[in-house]
Structure formats: structure tokens, C-alpha cells
Length: 183
Image 1 (cartoon, rainbow, N blue to C red):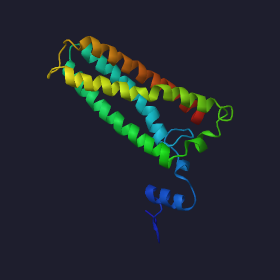
Image 2: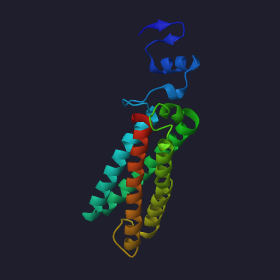
Image 3: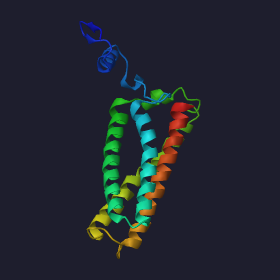
Image 4: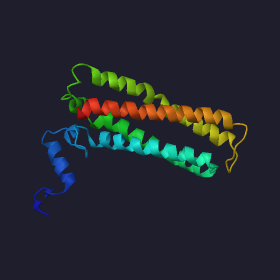
């Protein structure tokens, strides 16, 4: 480590802090993928792959009659997703200037970036609400340990609505990410 009067030169936090104090915005701190996106945008882009896969696994467990495992996965995934959404929203509203990062896109000036964001939000906003309704109703109406019952038909419909919305949220999110930060 190289020490200076202000701290360690190879400490990432010190480098980020000194860059910020030198007039560099947090949005200028690159993500970990080779794009113009921030760390949080990169993280959410990849995390959505995991969410879609985990939902598929969870559905597979139900089909095998492993209802308790399905319940645990859905509760855990919902908690992780809620925390991720909160962190993402805080980052987008108070830390990262995503428009500055998207401006070099050839699609920015044409309005396609904003259009893709609008399409994405049409799915991203109702998805957690539908998922919460699905989860809360299941916790209220299924016995513990969970097993099929009178609520199964309704849960199946709400569950598929959640799956479809989550997949559309992921696909439109990746499309937005592509036109804004990759192209």
C-alpha cells in the first residue's frame, strides 16, 4: 500500500472519495460490466437473471409436491427483491445520474431510451404489487405446512400473473439497459 497524507492510494473507497471531491459525480463511477452503466444498474441487470431462474425452480418444486420448499423460496426471494428494489430506487433517485450515462447512446436523442423505460415501468411497477398480493394471500389461506386446498386455483392464477409480469419486467429491463447503456 502506498500511503499519502490523505490515506491509501490503492484503497477503492479513498479513490472514490477523492474523485468525488475533485468534482466527479457518483454516476461517473463505472459498473463492473463493460458498459456505461453504474454498479447498481449492472447488478440489477444480472440479478434479474437469477430471479427468473429461481422462479422457474420454485415452480418446478410445486410440480414435484414440495410445497414447503416453494414457500421458503418465494418468501426469501420476495425479501431479497424488496431490498434490491429499495437500494436500486435510492441509487437511481439520489446517487446515479442514469441520464448522463445513457446520453452517449445513439438511441438517446431519438427518444427510444425513454420509450423503453416507459414500457419497462409498465411491467416493473405492478409486478411487486401482484407478487405481494400472491404471497400475502398464500400465507393467509394455505395451512402450515402448505398443501393444496381451496385457495390453490386462485393462487395458481395469481402466481402465473406474477411469473409473467416478472419475466416481462426482466425482458423489458434488459431491453432498456441495452439501448441506454450498451448501444
